[in-house]
Length: 98
Image 1 (tube, rainbow, N blue to C red):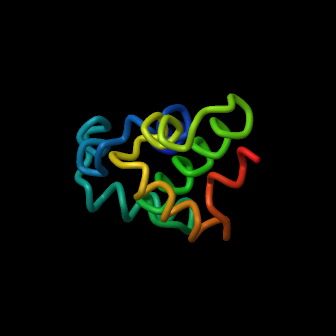
Image 2: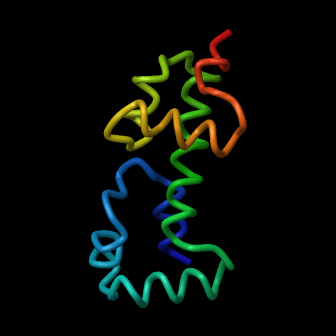
C-alpha cells in the first residue's frame, strides 16, 4: 500500500492523518479503515511506532541527543518523545547514549 510506504519513507513529515489522507485523495476515515483492514493496526499507531523507531535509530546510530532526535522524528517537544519512548521500550531514551 502506497500510504504505508509513504509513512515508512518519512514518518517525521506526517503532521496529521487528515493531511496524509488529503495527500492520497481519500477521506481520513477511509484511510483509517483501509489501513486497519490491510495491516491490522491503526494508522496513527503505525505512524507513532515508526517515529519512535526513527528516534531510537538517530540516537543509537548517529549519536544525536534525545532532543535533536525527538525533533527529527517529528515530535514537537522532547518530553513527549521521551514519554512515548519509555512506554514503548521500557526505558528512557537517554539510556541509549550511555
